[in-house]
Image 1 (cartoon, rainbow, N blue to C red):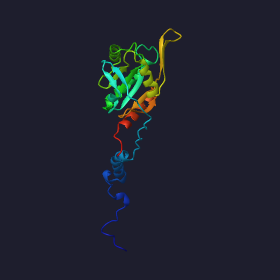
Image 2 (cartoon, rainbow, N blue to C red):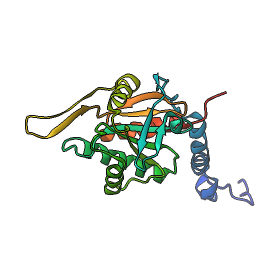
Image 3 (cartoon, rainbow, N blue to C red):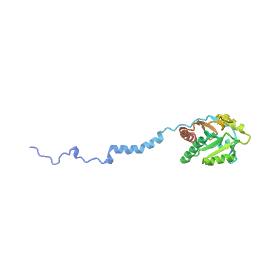
Image 4 (tube, helix red, strand yellow):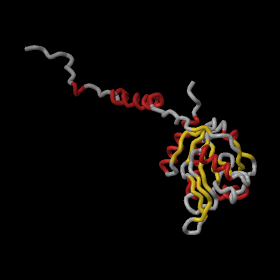
Length: 224
């Protein structure tokens, strides 16, 4: 009869369990947790900024302080531009509110993009009126400027909007309800550091999101 061995053979169930921190699943999870965010930075697709569409011509308007506002004041900054007039009882209030939302977005992201609102009613919207309108909508003058044309120079303003911005602008006249109206674009424009238009965008919530991201793309330094 064969003698029993001094050491009994260890069954698989008797082996000590692998520590949880040595589990291949845990190791794989930790490696993925660390590397995936890093890879995203290098692999994510950042769209190219929109191409230049039109170069704005030289112009001179007046800001809310009565100071000249020229093309040179636009240069060096990325700016979102819209059109409005203070006595408008239709879409203008909504447009100004949407610009205010952009102001809040840029403030929160600490992005140095500027805002410019151009009045299409220079007869009414003199600098003092613009300044009061700014206060009403909480516009920060460090970021957001309101402008109008000089007295008697409405024709130059019309030319700038139609020929420069390539946007429509109508005459000042009462509509069917007796309310003074001036037809103008409800779209927002992105203007680059050189005073060139990079695109027009809707003033909807989706449009604001696109403006926010596309303007930041324009803000990025150009590739060398």
